[in-house]
Length: 416
Image (cartoon, rainbow, N blue to C red; front, side):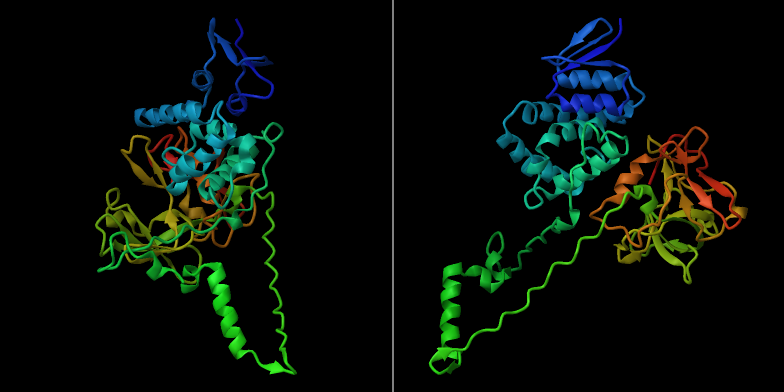
């Protein structure tokens, strides 16, 4: 008996999205109620339908990489069922601005910073409420929504059913700096002490005070107050124009050669490396590889360097990039990626993906989350080859030959 998924025409968009994303071969029909007939069984619970569809696809990793993640998936699917499915708009908006926005404050995705079925389901449920995701009240939800619509919807050609929503992330405010209570302050700190004086006055009081000052100082000619000159208003700068350039091409990955390496003076787990990436001077890069490599195995070693990250201070040492490593799923190994044939490459040679080429960003804008969008698709295969999706990472050499990259022993591992 062929499997059939029956869903309402204007409902259950999250189930339709899951079905299309995993490229399910289940026949989809329009019905008044949602129901999945599969293996002689009828399932009418949306979450159970979703898990059944995914479990019979080649994307079972969306259900969680281990038992701990699977438990988190169950918890969030339960939340979606109770708080986002079949409830009023007011409750959905409240969850967008509170529960979801707060959870995504320090996360790229809902679970362990990689895509799971939770992201797909929540996106599908919130899609019709996208206008309710305001930059002022739910900036983290908005960043996440834009990431999913680009990495899931656009990347998988699903825009016909889920048209892209125009979002300007340049309007997302920076997180507010916390107020730190000083010694001697009252419990909870004194917010007034750190706030600008003008904010402490009511608008009416401030206006009256200013009016009094102006009357005393305003010069008079012929009994008439002097007219104020209007200041020219500054026009806002035009927003940068987005292009259809592939996201992965914005990432600047280069061949690097470690020239020197030493242990970080302030952190036993970190190395401080000087790496030649084809520039006038080597770059200082900090890596947490002490556990995995002795110093002598790090020196004069070819590596792959993510070169356009925003510089970050790591225990007092500024790092100007990141070396890419393959990590075993069970955490048993972390290995530096390297060109298959180091005799044919040189420091500074760039890595590219065939068919997805373009000019990398000078420095990745953290708000755009380009690296967060690309990283989950990086992995090694059974042959240890480094891939982006199903395409190999290739090094563009001076001779025009394309050189692949690989790990030493980590098969089917993530890359970060």
